[in-house]
Image (cartoon, rainbow over all chains, first blue to last red; front, side, top):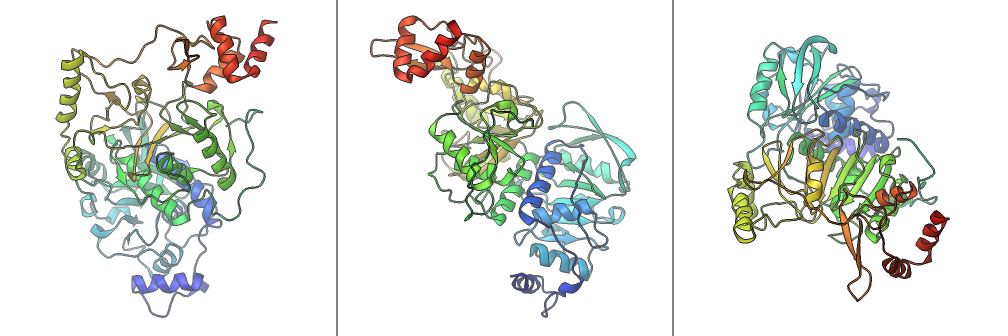
Length: 216
Length: 320
């Protein structure tokens, strides 16, 4: 079964015709059914309550440069139906093999084609407008970005408001590019279109749906 | 969630032949992605690849697929049908998840981490730790006015909801008031017109600023939508005809509650009737706490004859 999955995945991504070297692969979720359910509930919680930081409890041995939280989110949500885009640091043969093997996910070169995107180096990431924004009649067809930050409690403080937040909540994400929150305003202003974000740091993860209004 | 003796443990023999919570993992992943997008765009109906469930459309297949995609071993499930825990639909869905997902079930709103509902919001307040899943027969609030899906989709895309206002206005012109009493359309976060499912309009105000996450699943129509916690939900109305909820002259005949949604119960063929809380758990809890209603003796006798001697015994004990 595993071999079969590996072969299908490599054929689809077109990386190699000889299959994936399983010896160097890091393991995926230990209990794929219940682990992914628990991780999903955390993702649902942080998407429904923007600004709430959750520390995932799962022990995952992940390949560099992945965070535990970003790996957990992608392993939980990605499969053959969700084109994945990796940024320049993450786009390595071991990481391609990791996602191809565990998720069977097709990897794409253009950020515009991705349903999910992994950003491990936010300072050099593409602007939000370079990801799928959804269509006016189908705003759900937009990209979800998983962005690895340096920290979720030591950066510049911003105040969040919007659905899911009773009044206001603060977020202190570190290591984001200067244009980040300004671009986020543009993203929120084109509601119902726009991208949704997960920001991660180690085990911590926070959700930013496009409805969130940010004050810096 | 705290556990108590009210909680019914999962069935001892859970079915081995199915994946956890019935749906296969890929289906759950697809539904989970749709739920996340639904939360990100409150009130927008996300199309999803609805699966065949082992019961007919109209019995909660959409709600069940949403529940199956979010439920885990730690959850406690409550299912209500028109407010009642003890109707066929509610009992069967509870038993389905006890068997396929080995979860505990309960009738107590406080103890549930997931409440799946058909056509009511529980009377007891819900908390941030809970999720309310609605079964949805027709997710499109504009469908009765515009049968073409492609046109409805454009109307949502361009926030073109004049047709619905005209429809409500026609009610006022004809009847002097807005006659819609259930499925009363709401605006979510000032953007999307949404059907609250056929809950009575009595429940509409509860949706506004609700602390729990609300998810909606339509199985036949294959749509999922959501209202995040603390989101503005406004029932449509006019400045000179503000939104109003139903009111009753009677109180609940069993527990005496004054501000609950009441069902009319016909007692005999001579015009005897009474009004009782539609939320069966809420009503039972109040009766246990010692509240009682104004059930007249004749009606009590008829009710006892219909429901059985059990109720009579409970009343007898209380009087002693």
